[in-house]
Image 1 (tube, one colour):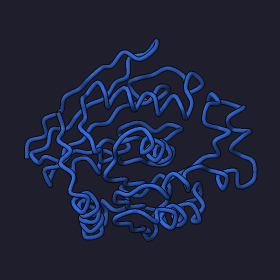
Image 2: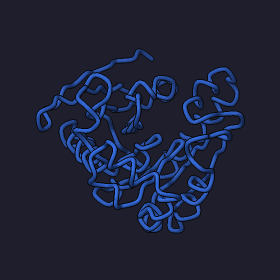
Image 3: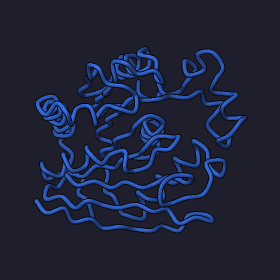
Length: 243
């Protein structure tokens, strides 16, 4: 189908959050949250068209300090990213219950959003989780100091939050992820004891920053992965239309 892209700019504090919506033909749409470092919404440049081929539209934005939104990461925090996501959800009038895809750091924000919004489906890609002690700390040396304590992620509130999540959950991990310990995606799935449907997919040979780009070279595996994403969305039975 023809890809209709609607760009948007949202005033937020002293910034203008930049993002876009891919208009799908189906009633279902997903909300995507990218990771840290040099990441931005282009991280989903393979996933979004693949979903659109199935009629599923999507909404994504660049967090403060990233992509077209610009600014410095030190001007934001994990909590700030959650507030930015809430602002986009409200501005774009995304209907609840939401279908949320979070990658790397964005996976933690996706999990946190389940406490603030009705969420039917969580799809977490190479997910990172963090100790609550880091949540309000601005990105920078102090934040790094907190999260680099040995196994600080083990103290995360993500486990308890997911223990109350009743929607469908898909966690996609990379076999050779040098950033995220395998224990994290495994424990995320194990924690979701009330989830209506949960599954862990480990992509063979993939790395933290090379997962969907690797799958693009293996069309059958890419199709199978997208099929699993669709299954996770459909099993929740969520009519979350994109505006």
